Image 1 (cartoon, helix red, strand yellow):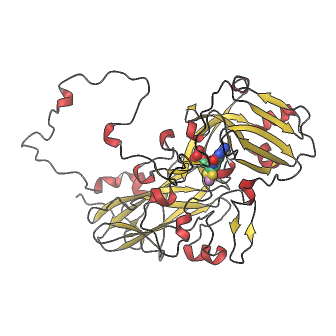
Image 2 (cartoon, rainbow, N blue to C red; image 1 turned 180 degrees about the vertical axis):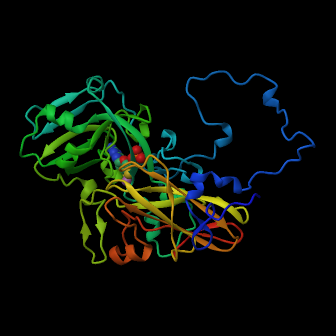
Image 3 (cartoon, helix red, strand yellow; image 1 turned 45 degrees about the vertical axis):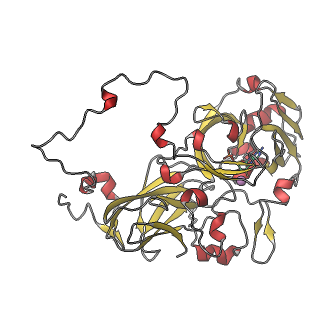
Length: 422
Ligand SMILES: Nc1nc2c(c(=O)[nH]1)N[C@H]1C(S)=C(S)[C@@H](COP(=O)(O)O)O[C@H]1N2
Ligand SMILES: [Mo]
């Protein structure tokens, strides 16, 4: 291993966290993960069978390598309930900020409807001057915009409210979060065409699934950044994510991003649908519940290392993860390797976008001793992600939704990584 200058591997916090400058100076050459080869001896590169014959022909729609079949969603649904439940994104096996469409998480209340796009309609009615109905062809004629945004289920990470830490990985605990590039029409454009009655203060959105999932939200959101999306990561929205049309309310809890969107109604007040009265309220220690808590609070998770990814012996590692906030951009992410006693600033991967996930990276020189890894996000409003103790003090531990507490991963001397409460 070559000698590196002090500045390149400057320690910024306890238990081996290094300055993020390391990623900028290219001093990563000090990692030493490769195997040294004998310059004079045998050729280290074999001519493998795949170099001796022509490769596979073209195919119409590309698929991942067969060697990557473990990179898959996992799901839980009660027996006999088919597609009702949730399938989770394997964040420990992914990198970057975009979730591949086929791995975007899915939360469906009554399975995925098989919608014929030619028969699908979007109705806009209620407190409007001219009720309008659109086919997909009609919608295709409107100017579109694209934005990268996360969708996170309000119930994501709810497992961390359990009294004892579950023996679970990042996919099982935090897999109800994904991030895509969404393309569609600003909802405000369609509403203005219908003509907004000044009495309209709320909006109801309804899906075309058997659950008839529907939610209401203030009209300010509709006039701000709400979108009616036709495309996801460049192609039509996947069936499980709302084909052929989904509502995107950037930063708002996943449930409000109504899939298979068929109806928008302008109303004077909230509609009080079943999905916003019986569910998606935040239980407080007093037994009262908060209703209509829309944006998701600042949050982060370490994806590498995480349970299932065994750390192989002392040495250099990149700690990497995702941070996001429903209130705007991520301002900073701090990482701790000693269970929150000391913190170092992580490098933020560009682009850092509002209401999208931001990948962060931290250099770590593991000495082989026990460590507890944590990440703590601060968003551009100054909001700081709470510890488990802080969130439980605020909200108790009987709830399920909006759990944004700091995740702790214990790294044992054996290299095994586990979910712990620190
Ligand atoms: N029509 C309809 N829209 C829906 C749902 C649903 O079951 N039906 N599930 C909601 C919930 S709870 C979440 S978290 C998000 C999940 O979006 P995704 O499945 O595309 O990840 O969709 C929301 N929109
Ligand atoms: Mo959800």
